[in-house]
Figure 1 (cartoon, rainbow, N blue to C red):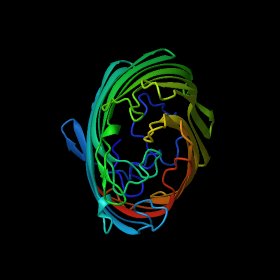
Figure 2 (figure 1 turned 180 degrees about the vertical axis):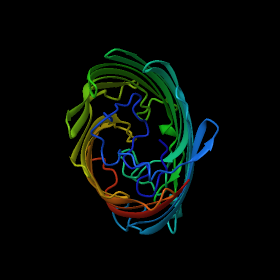
Figure 3 (figure 1 turned 90 degrees about the vertical axis):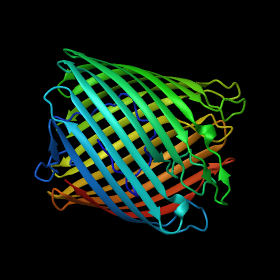
Length: 417
């Protein structure tokens, strides 16, 4: 699905490296408020032969109470964004081909060092072999920006940090009766642009450039129409471009095994959970390995026909930038409520907490976010989405990162065809 990022939601908490084999929630029943189709409100798009085009233009005005994420002397600012995008999808009965392009121009009124020009291109094709067995391939090339909330953001950065990512993925799925087998391989390249410190001095980021190679296999057994159990194994190889004897070279190998289930637990509750163990070893002898539990959990509860409450939890090993840190383990829990006040008006409220525990140095980060928003579909062609967000970040220890508070507000208008 094509995402047009906005002032509030763009890349917030989202990992740069998505899972290579996503776990899909059951969708035949127990659909959430956000998933229920509203064909009378959906854009029609433009027919072009066997394809359909969906163009959209987003305009957004926003405000931030702390543009640079400063502990003291926070600078307020106004933000304007312009986001054109287009998505094309095939309309074939078998096989599928889709592509998308979006652009995000973001301008700050005063703190111009935070100005951003991001874009994303993606193409994906699926070859149906027999029944539900298929072969999927995708190519992605994007320029995104690291969010100042994440644990890998430099404490002294006074400007945006651009990241170019190129990725190629190939995934095969074989289905026989109740057994589903998947194999996936992908290559990701990350190129970090240099930035500036709070004092205006150059901030080198080349030491973070890297390539990530992954290979995964998963076996899944279907117990019922919407219930299955799975086991997944993943090998990940990370190679940094700057190969030195210092502790900034975190070239590593990681092995991970995860077991879990996907199920409609009751007629109104569905759940997906994967829990396992990861072992990451670094090539540099001075960096200690990181071994820890990993998890990804989601539970959706349709309290009524118009209200959905979702619980999420995630735990994984992330890349660190501190010279003596092997990495950090990020643990996140959250709850979100979505309510359909009117057929064309959705309201949402969410709270989540994240704790980042660094390995090799004395540092612990805590992140709290409270957000509220709405989605008002005026017509097939016009969508309004206001959003208010409060974020507090605390970093403690001998090597602390940035600690600050921020309030964000944004009002977006999307014009669709």
